[in-house]
Length: 211
Image (cartoon, rainbow, N blue to C red; front, side):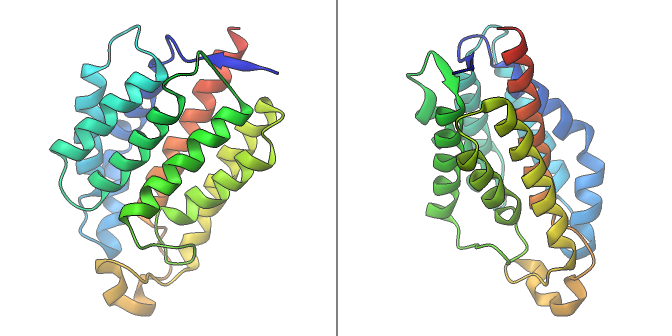
């Protein structure tokens, strides 16, 4: 079964961080339409700081752990703890793996989702990051025997989930106070989640090609 190495794959996380920093203004713009408007700023700050602390030869699990530590200890708001738990559980799940195949990738994402569910109350349909993450995890588990297809399907499912939030009415957070007025804008958390998962999958696919 195809797999990619844990060792030396920390660059995947640095690449994810670069994309989040690059999209800082966009994430804050869409958040500002129905939320606090600081999602992009906070995310870019946390991911940017973490990227500076990830060693060039870091493993994927160590890089995810570093990212988790920064998000939970240095970033305020709700997204720091949520994403912090997400990456902490992912890191712990694959920490002992020398290689990550489709089954382990699915297990990693499932653990990340369960980490978020342990500290948050959101469910599918509430217009949150969960709307991007849950279908991505389901796609990972449905394609665990073929990691190449799995990576493609996970990224697509996350983006479809992100898009689905545009027509939703927010049920949690500041946006929930807007009621019907929260409809018509994609959720910022679902958008950042889709960016993260797309680039996680693209990075893993590149590592697969490298053998």
